[in-house]
Image (cartoon, rainbow, N blue to C red; front, side):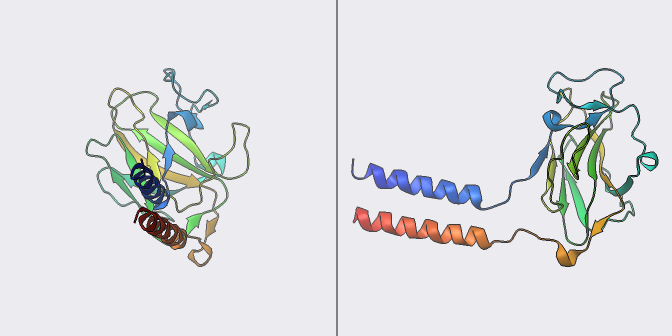
Length: 203
């Protein structure tokens, strides 16, 4: 029994270090969608508060395209093209937008994923950051946390492109706060100290 307790404590400490070693991605999925193209209905697991948007008109809503990631790797020259990059899964069912440095969007910010295989809904929109709207509150995105688009079409629909849209407000890199390894290092130190105490007690 004396040997089981230290092993359990050691496993718990190592698990906690793994949990805090990296900042989790913001997962964009059906249950946190803000709006969608609803001409042919919606999947059963879609956010029940999601708004049907018959057409996503960038100009008329005061928003503009800020960044766009294409499955073919084409680089679209937009205001924040140099701040992000996008990777896609092998079948383009999922995608991840990663911050690479530079300006980030401020004000109202939305993300969009469009299907490239004629599935419905054709596209989904998420409200990433900004004041509360009639359709709900934002997801509280900080502009630097990776955005992970989950598989959105159950019948193996593929993503055509993903994009960021927002008001013409940008935050310069001089004031962008990027999570560093300070907290992780502190947790690692505490974990190692705990392991040391466990080892000494075992001896």
